Structures are given as C-alpha cells and as structure tokens.
Image (cartoon, rainbow, N blue to C red; front, side):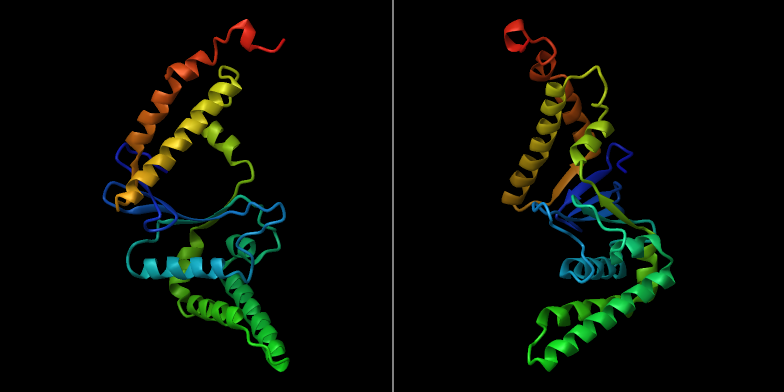
Length: 235
C-alpha cells in the first residue's frame, strides 16, 4: 500500500505496523500475533489479545487516528481455522457477526457461572467479557471497522515477500534471494533498534525501502553469488 515515495510505514507507533500517507493518514493497520509452537494458535475466540485488539482499534477510530478507509489486518503465522470466530466475523455480514459475538459472550457467562458454583473466580473471563461489552456498546464504529477487517495468516511469509520483490524467477539464485531478503530484513531490524534506543518513532519511507532494496540487488556480495568458482560448487 506504499504507492508514493513519501508514503511510509511505522512500527510500534499507532499499531504493531501501520502504513501512512505523507499527511499521516493511516492506510493500513496491522496487529501481528505469532506463535513459535507447532500447535500454537493466535486470535482464538476467547483470547485476550483478540478482544484487546478490537478495543484498541475502536478507541483510535473514535479519536480520529483511523477512518472509514483504513484497512484493519489481523496478521499471524498460523492458519486461522474456518470455524473460528474471527474467521466468521471477517467473512459474515455485520448482523451475523454481532450475533456470533453475543453467542460467545453467553458461553463465557455460562462458563463463569459454572466456575462460581465451584467456588472458583474467573478474572480472565471477566476481562474478556468487559472487552466484548466494549465492542457491543460501539456497534456503529465496529460496523465501520468490520467493513475493512482482514485476515493475513501467512505460513510461508518469506516466499510471499520474495514474490513481491520479484525474486522468484529463474534469473536469480537461491543464494542471491537469501542475501537480499536477509539484508533487507536486517536493515529494518537495525533501523528499529537504533530509533527505539534513541527514543524516536520508527518511520520508514517507501523511498528509503526502495533505495535499500536496489542497493542490495546491486551489491557485490549479491552479484558475486552468480559467478561462483568450480571449487565453490558441489558437483
């Protein structure tokens, strides 16, 4: 979504990641939830992170940080099940989504009642119910968010990035591809660390990304990856 040279992305500012126009208008906002466990899951139905994400987005919508054109993305490295609440919200009508949310609230209230009968407290459930209520009380705003809500559950993110960078053709070797990918990723990481350590907001302009990408493609180490000697090739 970075179309103009002065469009930029921010990291850990208005959201985990966001893209902006030059005037600061937020084009896209991303909440990233990743898991390193093989069986890990993210954005589960009654997870605090899901409902806290919605609350943060609604608050910033109310405060004018986001608008009707902002895209709201739940990004994760795990596939989100088709029967999950988030998947249904994204792919259902607004009224059906509200009904699904109310059904979840009823389930949580029943779970809370069962725990109370056993003399157990339910602080986590209480927090989630409060967040769900916050969503339901702001239906008009949530409807606007719902219209632009998306899921990006990428399990092969590197491959997709390389495709977007035109690094998937036969004219480039695996070694070149890895050098460019790792170089670009490392540059973004070092930029973040430097700015955070100096108390600055991480802002990266499209122009800077383009320049770094071109310098990596033309760097001696990447070009040399084509012309390896026989002693460097296993035959």
